[in-house]
Image 1 (cartoon, rainbow, N blue to C red):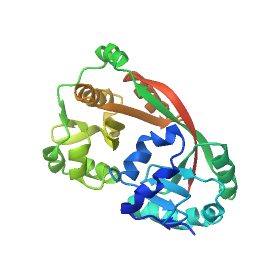
Image 2: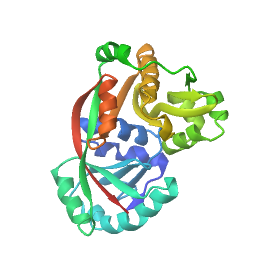
Image 3: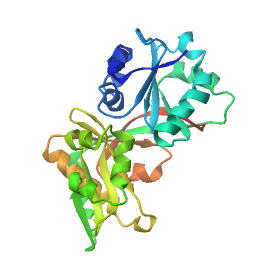
Image 4: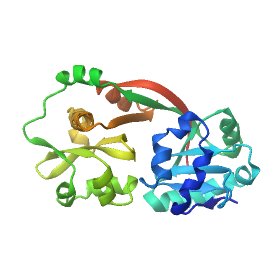
Length: 276
């Protein structure tokens, strides 16, 4: 049987972070530390040997013993039923996307989801190069006169009648106050309407993972996402924060935007995805 771990017990799975990549993983640490929203499922509540760490509505990663039958045997039924329900109830999600960190987990997951149609991809991880960013930013399109860029604070969130920022933060953070105290964000406004935003979706110490989106299709391809990210990155550089960028290999626009902002490809990890 697979159990949902209580948030106060998340630290119990820290011993399952065995590789340097896992020990330093921003998302894993953000969830285990209780900073950002996520759920941890384990084989044993008291002494877990294997776990699924699920970043709510975003991506999951398996850690620990890939040969542990107490976790592997019920995994198919768990994914098809309990995880499907939990994902939909927590954020309306209808897809399962998981990082497959090594060949052992790849073999396991091929068997577990053999009854499904699924797709392989890769998650790309980028490292910020401030010199490259400083050299590139002079080539960005200027902000049109009718737009403004503001730091996301309580006033911006409260004045957002469409609750765009609130709903985005609710995906990643336990509360708005948690974000305001530990996260960072900038947005593009047209009057009082939020058009685009760049904000921290995962935080571990001074390391911040970026989430960026333009919410109105008619406002896309105007360079607004680039400019709002640039404001975010300037803040990071001025305050000693380290921004991180990751995206699926097939997300061509996101890869291109990251490179335009001075991020350089560092590594990749195989992913598996299907619709519940």
